[in-house]
Amino acid sequence: MKKVLILGANGQVARIVESRLLKEQSDVELTLFLRNSSRLNSLKDNENVTIIDGDITNYDDVNNAMKGQDLVYVSTVDHTGDNIITKNVVKAMQENKVVRVIETSLLGIYNEVPGEYGRWNYAQVKSGLPAAINADKLLMESGLTYTTLRFPWLNDRDEVKYVITHKDEEYVGVSGSRQSMADVIVKIIADPTYLENDSVGIADADTQGETRPVY
Image (tube, rainbow, N blue to C red; front, side, top):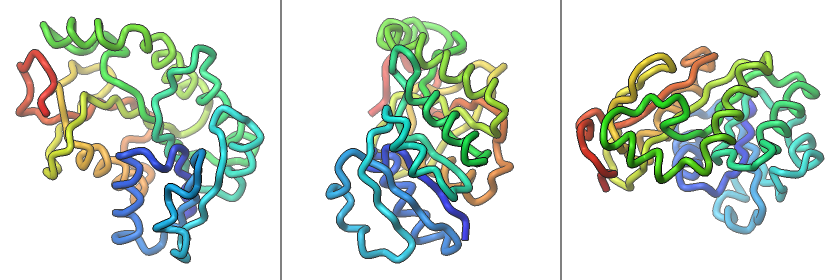
């Protein structure tokens, strides 16, 4: 069995990922880590699910959850000023010899979003950019096998439709569905070599050229 730890397991994209994994990948055992485990009561009786109450900013909580895992998905963007979330994850993974991590980030950390939308996006997210930029740097320098996911502005459309851009490429699109973000994560969990040691942008290419998010 492939053991997957999801930190921030009640997030909207995380919930989609969990549902798909339980339906599509019978070889996966999930450890779901969140502040209030009762939020995931609907999964508590699933034999492939372990639910843990914990605080991602508490190293001991993260370290205890990390034991025996094969892959970690951090479903929250690290906006902490001292990057305590990413530091806790990296340290616990190194301590427990877990090597594969997927971490959520946001578009704009490389000034890779062009035009009017790029200017608008920067104005909206600039307060959180330093932490997001440093979280990506910490992952790159950690020696772990990582993927940074640079999410666009998200919508709840049902369609799975996206294009992937890489670190040295201009971001394509301005928005995408949560279903699409989840699809990328599910693919990485199915094949951990997919997008390894990369920072990728994910968005619906049909939204390219828009000046505001597409909902």
